[in-house]
Length: 413
Image 1 (tube, one colour):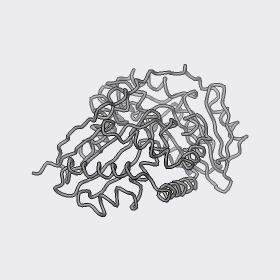
Image 2 (cartoon, helix red, strand yellow):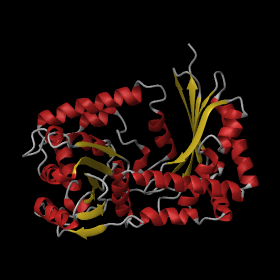
Image 3 (cartoon, one colour):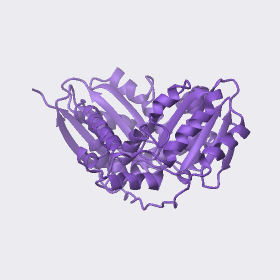
């Protein structure tokens, strides 16, 4: 278990303190409960856009990074479909600087025309470089809109297209900020060589007077059950064909989620995994192959992805993948294989928990899901699953009519 103290300010801010006096640093992690699934069609990418805007200026902070670097700190952030997470590391003795910086941009971010247009150009350039001009860069744009019909997971966090980013108005941006960037929609984790009473006082001092906003209960359309296999072909100047086959799976916290996680590990985790052994080491079609889950708050995807050897068509490679999956469903999972995967998961969990920043992020994320205690209870539940439970969900999930397939075809010049 990870020890922690937890309390709430009157404005709704959730504060979690994790003491580790073996470290001289402090981690200041602020999670906002907003990601791309809270966006509207034609205004996609706003959550990610705000990740950039938040590193501009606020009323009392001309340049965010510069003020943090002055006290020996560093910072970064990431956006996912479900959350936006900002984090800083700095000497514990300078902890109050983090409170000042983060509270100022929560309360009074400088959304000037110059800042907005500067970051708009930055994000549009990122879109072009990472998604339009990279080989296979638009895979998830195409795969998401194929797999999802109505849920906002059908676009990536960067946004559906450049037109959406170009079209943000000042009103769109201001409304998004007021709706999502306030204490009632945030979870703060302070970890490291910190004193709980000091953190309480600093939280009240710097965040206590920031007003919260009415709670949003957006009606996010739920994806209908998939009844037939879906597929699409993308042709591009890429070195070789690639195959992406995804299956709908339960949401995080729901029955079947942990089983799906184990299924992806058994089939695709590491060099000894079934896919690697059958399709790469002992096969002639795949140059690389893997499996993983998207880990979404709403029902997500179990993903199989692979690059083909030169000249091998993706459709032919899918047949080989299907044969391995069929063999897996027929033969089941041995006790030895399941235990090995569980042991690997335990080792990875232990390794991740060594880093103070990872612990802080995990406490924030699982608090967002309902309780920081889920950090360990989820793992314990996964570790206790039986072969029969995993095999049952494998047969539920790995059905062809539950799949969406993207054939990424190499155009030969």
